[in-house]
Length: 160
Image (cartoon, rainbow, N blue to C red; front, side, top):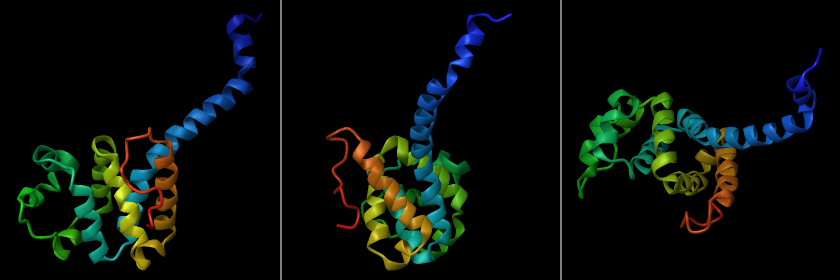
């Protein structure tokens, strides 16, 4: 005995393809913070410090205390005008899991900061040499094309 719900379920392949497309869109949006985390994990310590500086630029004092259970609280001094850059020791202490949480936050509060990571990675041969670095650059360029006009002031080509 079939009812209307069974029929709707049987007609699912076309709807399933549409849902797969939507899920693909959602999945690609989730990939950027994960790629940032992978790039950070594979990057040499000096590049890690630059990545952190770029990611922490839009983050305020309360977020510094809250993200990754306070792992970024030591960077409160960076909110001053004449703050010193992040040290190599500090960059070495931050894990890729911490950076994943930070990148997820930055993706929500300031997507332009993530787009600026593309310029940072493309400008450094070691940063681009990894598969994750290449994947991040590609994901950022696709993501930037999908942003509404006027959302980003970054150049369309992360390498320029």
